[in-house]
Length: 264
Image (tube, rainbow, N blue to C red; front, top):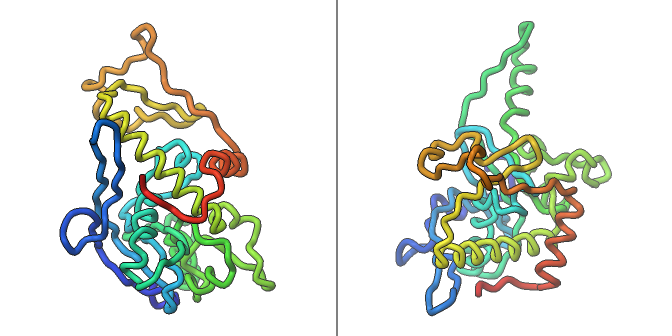
């Protein structure tokens, strides 16, 4: 990826909140003098040559995707948390405050092709390249997109000849305002989770998203939580499907207009 991008790694396997040389943790003041600190490790942070933009990359050996609805409901927190940490630490990393250019999953796998007929080397390489494209969100700025993917083959965003973004790629891009609002939203989700933990809330409330997805589908701990629909009063926490534009509108209204980000 680095060979086909103007963005280059500035941090690899960078921990936050775990030691003297680490990036700062996410820290939240809670009630009764308690506080919550979130620590972890970011696989990779890239930046453009001018240090104006940074990119968070997370390596995955299996499949990965980013879904705005699941981010909104707090079901996908990892990449947004990393983005928030990197945004807070951008001045320390790059010498000045920088803006998010995006967050991407990078696959570490050798995909297998199953075809009904033999493929030429070129056809096989094209199909493998398509399977290895990096899902995620990038800034809806054609100039930044070109810098991220100078080879135009690594990310799932395509530009027209006039530089505009194809409609089919719209779900893969976010404006600067979108990224700011999303980080503020995740900030609130994390702090509220800390409050619930402090209050001793351990109730099993697995979600059901429409009719297609449930928290219990791949869970190994059902004998522990003893969640059972046969028990009277036991129900899933039903989450509604919402259009992406309505989600961003709801998040924008929730966080209000805010030019910067501050941890409470």
